[in-house]
Each structure stands twice: as structure tokens, then as C-alpha cells.
Amino acid sequence: MASTLIVQSPAVAAPLAVDIHAHFYPESFLKLIEEAGSPFGMRLNRTAKGPTILRGDAPGTPPLDATYWDLDRRRRVMDRQGVTVHALSLTQPMVYWADGELGVRLARAVNDAMSEAHRAFPDRFVGCATLPMQDPRRALDELTRVAALPGIRGVYLGTNVNGRELSEPEFAPIFERCEAAKLPVLLHPINVLGGPRLQRFYLHNLLGNPFDTAVAAAHLIFGGVLDRYKKLEVCLPHAGGAFPYLAGRLERGQRVRPEAKETARRPVADYLRRFTYDTISHSPDALRFLVDTVGADRVMLGSDYCFDMGYERPREVVTQKLKLSRADQTRILGTTAARLLRLS
Image 1 (cartoon, one colour):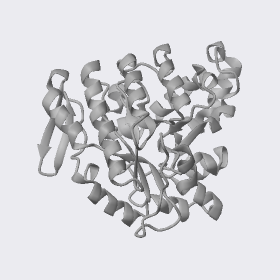
Image 2 (image 1 turned 180 degrees about the horizontal axis):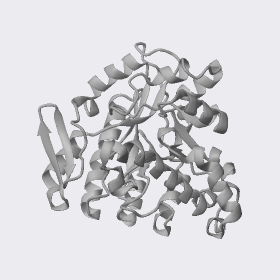
Image 3 (image 1 turned 45 degrees about the horizontal axis):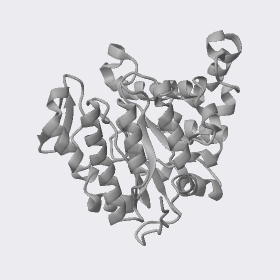
């Protein structure tokens, strides 16, 4: 893919700020759910506050306002936030709930819309492609297709695929192709662990999301994925979830439990810098711990745009609350993401 020089908009404050956790629901994706989702228990409920995606009796998305797909409105929000670039990504419910055929149609709708957003505003948007991972052969075909699309600079995967771990052999060709194409893999929690115990108090998100991220990271390590694909870049959301803070416990398990000694070639601590992380911790102290543990060059700006669990002012935690050097602020705000996403 040809790289594009990112030029800052005059309305956006310096330095470069790249939000690597910015969600996007194109209208073509929503329309396809509305037209074809019913046989899979998925429906779109259009309300005065915006469409909501629902599946059975499970909690649906909040009403999605037009900023999720209206690029002009989104750019105005970005300018107010001082964010130069959004790396666009689909999130819940992803596309894994469909069969392979519909999964491809859904993924193509999202990926084509991301590429169109980049072509319309190449200095403001790049895309992290969605893949129909429930059908690995079709996912590989779609990965081959999107690798040639303008503006697609990463791949966005759930922390599991309908309960299947990312370390399963059937997904190995996806990681191999991502590594070869220099497409980073960015993860997001989906179908999280916890069951009925996390249904109250919104705990499926508050606790389920960070722990599902930790489970996915552990499988990538203990399942040997990071050792097999040494140049593969993987980004963990929500400041790594629970993973960075439990690495010592995981490493203890490597030393004393035979189950944890099977495939990982090095201690867990050695893998901490194999991942990158976003800034969405909601705790400056926890984020400072992450930066001190993995280095400012492995942490990138994120907002969870534009859900209520995200940051309304994503730059603020980096520039005002962590007491970082100007060089480290610059790395976290944009230069690491610019390298990872090949923005110049």
C-alpha cells in the first residue's frame, strides 16, 4: 500500500495526535444489519436518539448518533479535541455473529467505507479492517483484498471469535499475512468472559472488557503466536486491560505450573514490549505505571470515540496528568502511531 503523508489541519493543535481507538459505524453496515440480520437474531432499532444494534435479549449498543458515520461532524469533534487522525475501527457487535457469507458482506461494507473516508480526507482518517474471522478462509481472502485498499493500515480483531481463542491454529494464516503485509493487529473485547455474574452494574464492560483483553494476551503468549510471528505488532486496548498488572502472576505460573510452560519461549515480562497499548485507563496512576513498565514508545493515544466509557478530551491525560517529558508526550500522542500505521 502506498503511504500517505499526514498533514496537520490548521484547526488542530500541534503536535500530531493520532487516536488509535476511534470507533466507526458506517451507514452501509447498519443498513445491512437491518436488511439481513434477522435470521441471526440481530436487528436494528431506529430511535429518535439514533439507531441501536440489538441481538436477542442481550444489552445492545447505546443509540448511535451521526458522529459515528458523518465525517464532517466527526472532523469538527476531532478539531475540538485537538486530534489530527482517527484510526477507524468497528466494535461491538463486530461481524462474527453472522455466517461466513453475510460476514464477508458486512466486513466489506465496513472496510470499503473506511477506505472511502480516507480517500475523502487522507490527512484525517485511516482504517483498521474488519475480518469475518468466523470463517478463516473467507477472512484470509478479505485480508488479501483490503491490503490493497487505500487507507487500510491495520486489522481489528475481537479478543476471541465466538469463544475461540486467537491462538487456535485455524487463525495462524491471518497472523502470518498481517505480519507479511506490515498490518498491525489491534484487539477489542467482545463476547467477554464472566457470564451472569457480570450482568449487573454494567460489569460485563467495566470488568469483563479488561479481563478478556488479558486472556487474549495470555493466549497469544502461551500459545506461541508472538514467537512464531516475531515482527507482528499487536495493540491491546484500554491500556492493556488487566494484562500489564498481572504479568508477574502469569510469570510465576510459568515457573511453577507445567500447564504454563508449554510453548512460550521467554518469561512473560519479556513479552510486555511486544505489545503496544492505548491510553484508556481512566487512572493517571495506572497509566503512569504502564508507561514506566513498557516505555512511552509503546503507548499510544486512544479515546474509545465516542462511547460514554471513553475520553472526551483524550490529549489531556497525556499532556497534563502524567508529568511526562515533551519527547514522551510526542511519542504517545502521535509519533509511535504514525510509525505503526505508516502515516508518512
